[in-house]
Amino acid sequence: MTANTRPARFRVVATDLDGTLLRADLTVSERTRAALTRAARFGARHLVVTGRPAVACRRLLQSLDYAGLAVCGQGAQLYDAGAHRLLSSATLDRPLVRALVDRIVEAAGPLEFAVVTTGLDGEFLVTRGFGDRVRHGWRLVEEHTALWERPVEKVLIRSRRLDDDRLAALAQRICAGQVAVTHSGEGMVELLPAGVSKASGLAEASRRLGFGAADTIAFGDMPNDIPMLAWAGHGVAMGNAHAELRRHADEIAPTNEEDGVASVLERLFPPTP
Image (cartoon, rainbow, N blue to C red; front, side):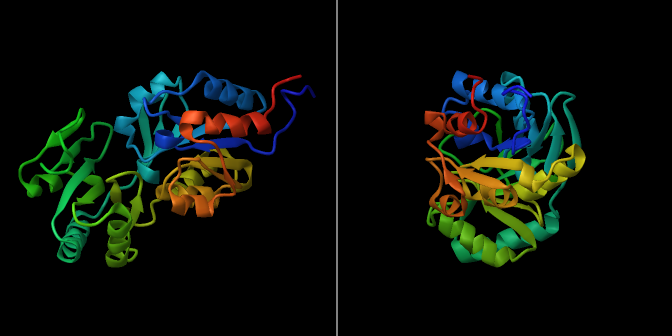
């Protein structure tokens, strides 16, 4: 076999998007694109695994020329990017999560909220204080009851009193397996259907695509990536990663701004001499 067709240890390169594959301007460098292309020549599939819901991924994935299966919504959705079709999705039990949210408020004090409604026409609904401004793609709701009018895939909570790590730990204690809790970015403590994680989404993708954990190298930057790195045969934390994720990684790469994904892939899938 030639150098660029010999079997490689990893058949799947699973990458988070924000803070990992993407730079701060939401682009992928030419170096990283070239590294992914070279990995594909060795037979390795690139699999996006993101906290973003599918509705927020379509244009971004198109800009990356990505047309395969993507794990979206922290593992709640399997999305066929090429066909723009959801293959599977999980939703929250709204009465349950509303009751748990009330208990979190009792313990944490006032919170601001956002929810992602289900499906490829889903919306990102926010309460007035969720951010310093209503950003593109957000829809402001004046009454909290409006958050719960449609089926919901995730709930996001923010506190002005507690930092994200303390709020996530508090929510995990209160939810205690009834819903999943994760921390995916600044101001992004998320409540998800029980059992949902990037690992559960990757495992479902593996069943559909015919690969295993040992075949997979995974890259991430936040605590929501811990299950994915734990599931994969080799877990890589970015140089900009949250300290908790770094403790669970097999390797620390350079930052996302320094083409950390590319630097690892170039070592594993070297250019043809």
